Image (cartoon, rainbow, N blue to C red; front, side, top):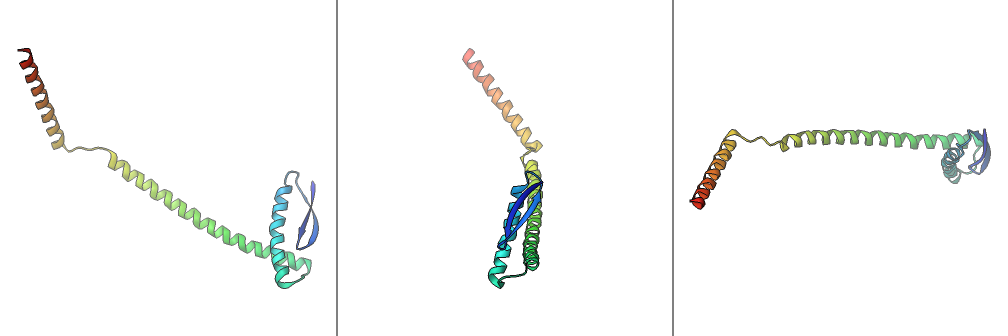
Length: 127
């Protein structure tokens, strides 16, 4: 076990953690210390247990708010993905060329006339 000394609300604590996890512990302690510092600035010196409890509750409140925001963001992202998928499906249907038979018939007639003109020109040039 690794031993880490952290400071929360101006008080020092020795805490054990798994090797390699020290930076996570320090980051968590910094968050708790920030909340404890706000409490001390507003209220003044508090008993250790009360300071830690109130700072922890403040962090829990912020965390709950962030979780709500994250959940709402995930729901909006999912809705946007569904809308995009729906749009892609509609767009794919639009891109597929479906020509009415009358257009195909007209194009075939134009092609036949063009071939007849080409044959006529070739005959004139040959003869």
